Image (cartoon, rainbow, N blue to C red; front, side, top):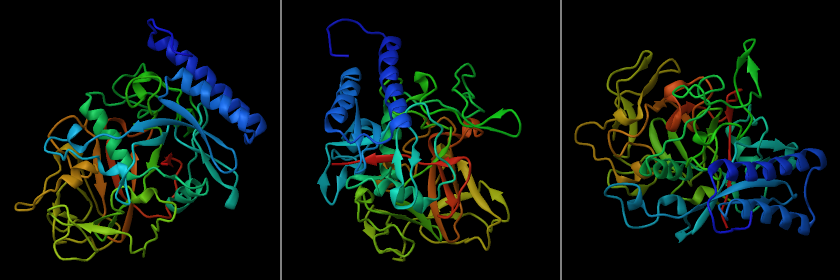
Amino acid sequence: MKYIPGPYNQAQLKQKIDAIETSLTNRYLTSGAITDATEQRTWRERVEDASFGRNTVLFDDIGYPSVMVAFPAFKESDVLTGGKAYPHPAFIVDGNIKPVLYISKYQNIVAGSGASARALSLKGVDPATYVNYDNALLYCKQKGAGWHLASNAEWAAIALLCESRGFVPRGNNSYGADHSVTSEKGVPSYMYSGNTIGRVLTGSGPLGWTSDGSPFGIYDLNGNVWEWCSGLRLKNGEIQIIPYGNAMKLDCNMNDTSTEWKAILQDGTIVDPGTANTLKWDYTAAPAASTANIQLNTTLAYPQPDETAYGYKEFQTLTAKAGVTVPMLLKALGLFPSDADGYEGDRFYFKNIGERLPIRGGCWSDGANAGVFVLHLYSIRSYVHTSIGFRSAFVK
């Protein structure tokens, strides 16, 4: 849709971009990779024209297409009161500011297997599940330089931008529909327990299920399937990150024993894990089961003795132990609320024993607990489930 002055309503815009993206999906499903440069350019131009440049099609090293949303850089102060007038951490890689990130418009599927496995972002498909953390990393990295598993920093940047604009996306968090607007539904792609709807086809929901309420936003950040995110973990309760946007680097090592993992002090300084007084998630008493008695701390007063317990709380109600300062970095990374509202009841979960990797967004059965700020930090890296998938991203 070349730009012609005049009014366009959302339905017209959605119809146009949907038709092109559905054609692209069908082209891939029938014929596989697109390696001809002219055909690649045609698909890219069609999507960019229809979205006024907000979406594009990127092709990986094999020629698999992915529909991506261009996500321009913004300052921390644009989304956080008291934030720095400097780009949000998601846009900083090796100290260099990236002017735009490209986020998968849709939860990903996987083409191929082993060394040939690649992640794809396409409309109208059943998202991949039963993918563990390391494979999610692998399927993105194998696409080539610039490709990566969407990072926690990127996810947080998107969530904070949604909140700052006063638009929190809905989604498939209630068995094919949204719990708060039950008339909003997606097209079922997976049924479980008989005839109960679980997953829906990517991008099959209404515009309220995108990151900005437009046909060109990121779909399904709230519900459908949980999504692994890179660059964040808990290690025995200690909050550890791959600093800023460095998780996007092709050679970034996120193994359990990697020295690239860093901890955080109360003033936001990045230090080696195990340094005294780094920030940790802790209980306020010895946990025996699920408990909301949790807090941010600088010591681990109550490490859980086994897998039985876990901590949980609504994200907006998270607190720090008296005397503990919460740095702006934690708020910028979506690890602590910046105020007391705007989070729609999204939940925070953790275990402070061993290594725990993040999943975000919630799934089809999480109701009000799902959303762009929900953070689940008690899965181990080998965990797989029918409700856990992932999303790739790209940076130049």
